[in-house]
Amino acid sequence: MERKSFGNMQCPVARTLERVGEWWSILILRDALQGLTRFDQFQKSLDIAPNMLTRRLTTLVDAGMLERRQYSDRPPRFEYVLTDLGRDFRTIIVALNAWGNKHFAPEGPSVMLVDRDSGKQVDLGLVDRNTGKEISGREHVIVAGPQADEMTRERLDSMQRLREAANDAANEARLTEEAVEPGAPKKAKKVSDLKVKESKPAKAKAKPAEKTGKAAKLAKRA
Image (cartoon, rainbow, N blue to C red; front, side, top):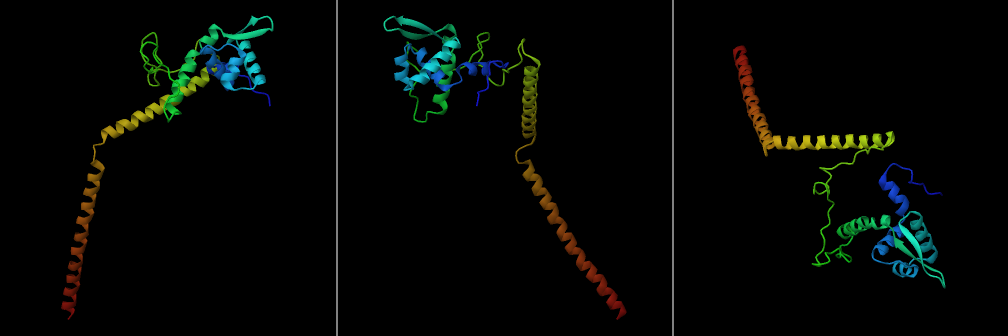
């Protein structure tokens, strides 16, 4: 079955996956960012079949992530060097490394990002360079850009409405909880129980009165 192309989708994530969505491609870029350039180096590091490595390297060259350069004439040999586009992928690799250490390394991190001078592990965060604020789901949202088509705008607007509805529901629930004093429902229940208990003896007292009246009539007849 032919794989669907994401290249024409108006989504930067989809267009990125079109170029590096295959896992071997991401691992090749990981190793390239660590300084590997030659075919045998990639093959040894990844333990990948030669024909698969050839296809993945070709795909990355075609995508503009790597540049194929000849370094030997006899025999002809080539190396694969990161382009500016490929070097920009460092941010993604670093984020994947941090995410993997956080969620999928119960035994502890085996690969870490550290400060070169201090040797301390980096506490990675995504920050807006304009304001210095850390990116968060509460203070930042994804919106349609100036070149977004109608379908993209409609999709993002729909997501925005869903988020706002969810936030409104959460705020309403929070305000309701804050308005109700702790223990109030229990106290109300106890008061109602007392009212029921008080009403029962009143009915019980009425019965003897009825019996007394009947007894009086029988006495008159007698």
